[in-house]
Length: 266
Image 1 (tube, rainbow, N blue to C red):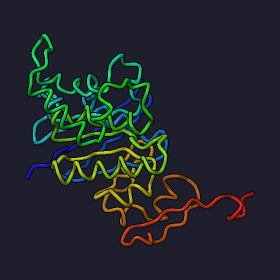
Image 2 (cartoon, rainbow, N blue to C red; image 1 turned 90 degrees about the horizontal axis):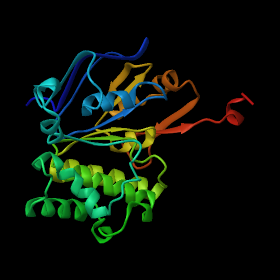
Image 3 (cartoon, rainbow, N blue to C red; image 1 turned 120 degrees about the vertical axis):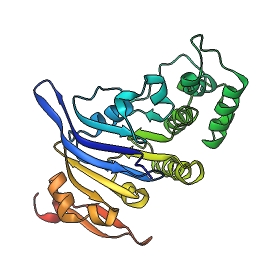
Image 4 (tube, helix red, strand yellow; image 1 turned 135 degrees about the vertical axis):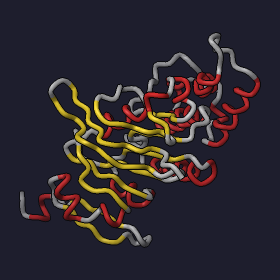
């Protein structure tokens, strides 16, 4: 089976500043793949390249066995959906209208929705448990509800691959778990390949099938959570003291930041 995403010798620069350096990895279909790394390591740039928002400068990205550049924007949007880091909350739409925007890749030039579009959007809202909010505006929702609305919009694209850039940022603990469980359901129930950027290494440990650790635009480590989330590797990436032991829930690492008061640095 061909990889969902295959990246070869991918580099990207903003002017003279290199952001990504000769990246190479693949994401298997139906997997939950989590990208971690410190600020400035190139995570968001990588997501934008995979989503087609940024144009590839050097290297190659294959989506479902086909070179990225051979997709038209509309064709790519039928395969890959992105939930961005910063949600466009100023959209003058209701929840239902926002979710319907995900049907744009299937509509004609007039953008008129058909009965099938309405049904797909309805099912996406039911799946993310925001159907009861369909007439509310985005500004009336909590952060967790807003995040689930934009996930519903992405689901309504009927993609094979879902890209999410820090979907749990700024959410409380309950909403973090709710979003992560939703991603797990996408993988298992809809067979969608989930690729997610996260700053939370413990969520990566608990949910990731494979984890990619970036540092300074390059791959520092990739593999299972147990392989990647070792304290030597994480300390080299983040430059701080950490304690890594086994999560009491079993089978995955647990990472604890060691404050200065405990390591003698203050």
